[in-house]
Image (cartoon, rainbow, N blue to C red; front, side, top):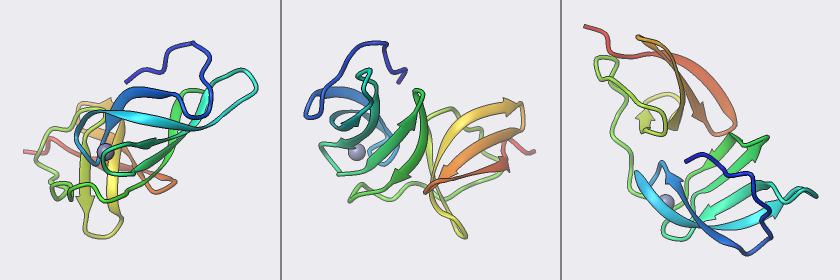
Length: 118
Ligand SMILES: [Zn+2]
C-alpha cells in the first residue's frame, strides 16, 4: 500500500489497501498537495475515506464497508489490518512496533495496543 512518488490529480483512480474492505480496492483521489501527493482518497467500493500526510495515513472514516472483526489481544496483527474495538470503534493497524505492540488508527487518533499475547 505504499504511495508511489508520482503526481496525482483529483479524480485519479488507483488501487490502495482498504481496511474496511480488507483488500486492495480502487480509490478515487479527493485532494492532492501542490506537488501532486495524495492527501485524501475514497474507496470506490465502500466509500471509506482516508487522509494522508507525507504518505502516512493520518485518519480513516469508514463508509459502508463490512464491519471489521473484533479486536483480539491474542491475535497477531499485520500492518493494514482492520479491527473493531469495543471502545474506540473501527481501527486500522498502521505500524507493528515490537513483537507485541501495534499502533492502530481510530478515526484520527493513533493508539498503542498489545497483540499476540499468549
Ligand atoms: Zn473499501
